[in-house]
Amino acid sequence: MAMLAKKNTLTAVLLLLIVNSIYSQAGEQTENADKVLKTTLEKLLSLKQVRYQHVRESKYTDENYHNVYSPEVYFDFTENKNLLDYQFQSSDSNGFVCYNGAHLFTLSRKNKTMSITKKPERNAFENISPLYNSLVTLRTLIPTLLTDKSISKTIADTSIANEGYYFIKFELFDKYIGNLGSLKTFTKEYIGSRRKPYLLLINKKTFLPYQFITLFKDRANDFIAATFSTIDTHPEKPGELSWYYSSYANEYSSPKPSKQLIAEGSILGNWSLPFYNGLKTDSLSLYDYKGKLVMLDFWIKSCGPCIASFPKLNELQKEFGTDKFQLLSINAEDNEDDIKFFYEKHKPGYKMVFGAEQLAANYGVPSYPTVIIVDKTGKVIYTSKDGFNREEIDKVIKANL
Image 1 (cartoon, rainbow, N blue to C red):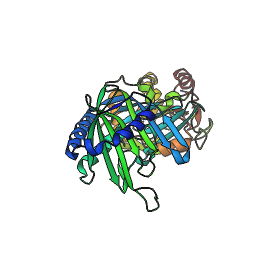
Image 2: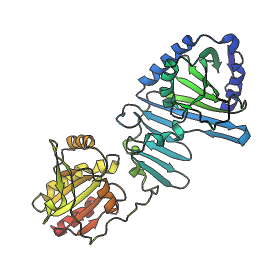
Image 3: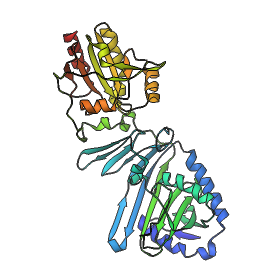
Image 4: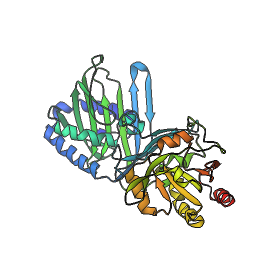
């Protein structure tokens, strides 16, 4: 058994390389490593939420590169009806990264800027730092390690600060582990060693990973070491509004829309969108309400202020009736299932349409919620400057009924 001092990550890795030399004597059979990996996988897959400190240290000697990245990461595996089967937040001194199932957005603390990717593709996550060599990487990787019989593994015991760990070593040939845990093949142009060794330390008590290390066969001093510490498997959930980029709009500037918000005094042309009424989907057009005062409320599900405004929208329609006034709730990007969820939860007394991504772009909608009020002739008489402002909206409606 090898003893490791509780020092910084770099020291631990260097000592692990020394421990690596004992494998010819201490290594056991692949099936014993598989037993531990299977238990670890079951543990990882059983997690509903998890929060931990993720320290990833990278060293490339020839490039004079040494970097330590240390965010706190939170994963939620229960909200899995999205592209990744999980949602996450990551925070460190430089910024904040969040994926809420619909948007991937990043906040820069230094520049006070926000970047937003709507409906990101899977490849957009390959280079997201908190996911690289993370617990979700191992959730994807371990099933491959268990089923691919060409991957031999050895296992030994070690300890860190009197804490017992399983120390598993495996090596890939002509393949390497991608950031999200899938195996990738080296290109023909790759000139380094095609043998890739990896080390994985697993806590004996919890069976959760502690350290995942990438080594380089032809670069003995280089490594990538990810350490998972202060793992909390029953963490307090982040506040609901923290998942929405709109919650940070006052402090962080977001990219400007390609068009300015449609100007007051503009005359709106007709459009037709799918209409959801809880029973069936039909269509609804703006000209269906010619002669009435019409309020257009643009929203998306990943917008905290939008969700908070739903009861107020019901109050508005009820207060002003439907003889001379019609409120149209317009979803700019979510699908019919999402519309159904909010329809059933809030039981709107107004009309709700969706599929309006292009319409929102045409109107230059800069953020959500955005309110546009159209008079009886089809002329824009009000556009919101700060989301949903009930006091302003009331005044406009009363003055134009």
